[in-house]
Length: 132
Length: 267
Image (cartoon, rainbow over all chains, first blue to last red; front, side, top):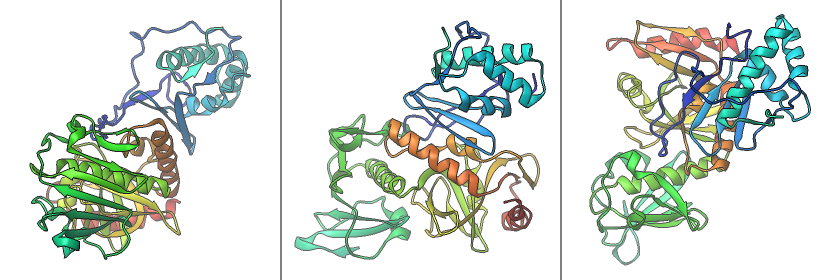
């Protein structure tokens, strides 16, 4: 999956340490997600952004910041496009259709990528409502 | 330093526009305050007044001197007895008998809180002034900030910089943490540092990720995280982002002049 086409490759960066001084050098590659426990995401789920995070988008690039823990997540273009649409109303199926249209990919692929992305975000606590 | 009432010594500071008074009851300010010399400010109403004492305090590293809020007061988590600062009243007391580490930490939090309330930001970053414009280099320890600042003719800060909203965009301000001669300048650009040659390469993305990874929070709270990220986004919207590679013998000013000429047309 290329970064421009898939929301499934968020890049994680460590937050500054508790004193603010221990910020790590940003990783250059995607976060491996194989070891992370994930929740199956149905196409009918309507994800919403968790109140436990804050986020900003600048020029099509989203950065998510955990309000309590130590996670800072930079999203690629496709993920940045879809993340603000997690409003608890739109379904995964509907969002995948938007992704497919916006990035010119097959709907089935958009659904698979989006479900994987949501499972990962849910495991990190950045979204809710994916397990319905 | 000036003399205050009843033999008190007072050092008036101004850091990024934030006025602070350090008051030593014995008339003698503790050693270790020399880095604040460049920030000696005018006398007058201070946002914060800290009473210094000679009691023992911790001398640990920065990570051990995390400032937290307890009962409305800022204090060092592992040694609350070593000092406190009441941000609402603008008062505090600090033990400086074994160094100024606690004072440094509380002052940084005080300045950070004041700056954040003005829509500004503290960031782990070196800042260098060239031809009246500031160039910002966020990064963690070991990323080359201090090395770069040491090779510049007009460094503003080598470790922590303040960004404040200005009439056009943001301005970068020097801080006493850790080496600085003071000063400020309009922020021209933000860079990520590299050591693989020499040159400046404009980056297609923005500086938001880099700034967000290097926030300095006055107190680590959800509110401060949210505000700081919002300010970082504003900064990222205002200035170009580039990658600066340099060698130990690089002419930093020449690189940054060339960089400014090439980047300013981007936004």
